Length: 355
Ligand code: KG4
Ligand code: ZN
Image (cartoon, rainbow, N blue to C red):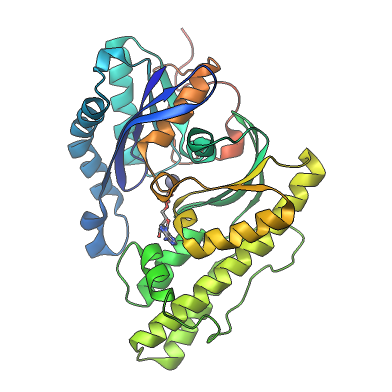
């Protein structure tokens, strides 16, 4: 079956067509992502109103392009899926309403996908990842360790108590005068920096939980930057390298706890799966590799362009749900907040009572 997927929860407008075969494998037929980075860059971060307007302006053409690239007429899709949250509500409304209109006109099923669930299931589109597996989700808005036990069956083992990891990258970059979005910039700078020059904290190290805390690290970077100001290009590179080194240590420490917890409660995971924009970072990937090796688990990381927000992951999550008969009605609500562990094996709560 072929599913059209729509993603508009943050600053990427995306549409994709994905096919799910009877044996559970998938194929991406088209995947178009339009980044709004240039529109938000002057403000140093995502401006929700600008994002929502940009989604409205681009989405129709993007869907047309995705259909064209896949050489599939709109009438021939089997279902339409849209990210219904969590995210910036203006954008979510744009994507979900568009999907509802298509579903209504074509009389095809609608699937209101949780954006985090889509990140969680992407590994099953790009490779073999049988349940249960341990997910490390690290994006601009979320940092979570999740036991993925099945479609619609997620247990959050750990989360951030303050900033998300991507957010820490972005804020560190901003403090050091690097352009938005900061994550890739910090990674580039770190390549020629000394990661041992600054002694930065590793909050919650060896603490008996799988939770994260990043705000103390961010503050420590700021204090060091202020202490040695004005910053030379080498200072910036060294701060980036030291920050990234601390992030990798934190990820390894917290995942060690998360995987131990997983083992106790759910047995051996089939894999450690990484998702979200931060999983595109090569140093973080190396850290994940070490942790997976130590845990005796296979590391599965989708290619970088499928770790960051895209339409294929939404289409795929829609296809996985559709295969189980988990479809939503046209009353499905856009949700700014929608924790992954509240996504159940049932359709989303309805905004209107059933008639
Ligand atoms: O998953 P994503 O595309 O969007 C959200 O759902 O948030 O993740 C975006 C986040 C941003 O904070 C960005 O700075 C970070 O992922 N990011 C990176 C890298 N590429 C993207 N962080 C570190 N290194 C990277 N190479
Ligand atoms: Zn995301």
